[in-house]
View 1 (cartoon, rainbow, N blue to C red):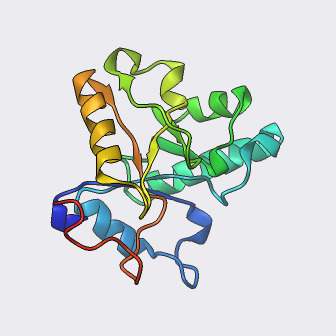
View 2 (cartoon, one colour):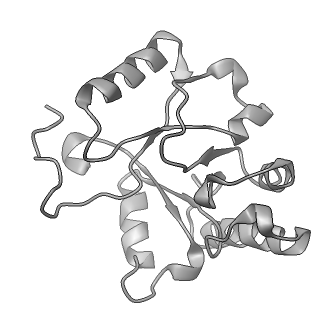
Length: 174
């Protein structure tokens, strides 16, 4: 993504950082220093709607505090609901330390959010456009143009990125 000049948000679960096969603090710091936002996806990626109040507070806020303690202050206040699940209790808990949250569920799609909605409860229920290796450029461009024409906020979700066989060719977005 650096090649194309994109800044990104990477949502992490602090419990996994440094574990075998997972990203490291050094990698996150390098991405952050290049302009990426490193943000909260929960402590252990638990389904928050199934948790009692104590466990919910822990799941949502321990990763937030970990991000703040490790210097990711610019973006610690962004949250992504594990499994895309949330209810009123979850949203209320997230609102305590975060400025916005998004749904990570594939296929749930709203085109844009107006800047007038910044700070509202709706900023804690953001949907996005999921981009996979089967998403057409036309679909992405339509979402971008719609958001631009309404002065909206657009979330493009790349739940995983790959450079392995089957990935889009490097010039796909040209």
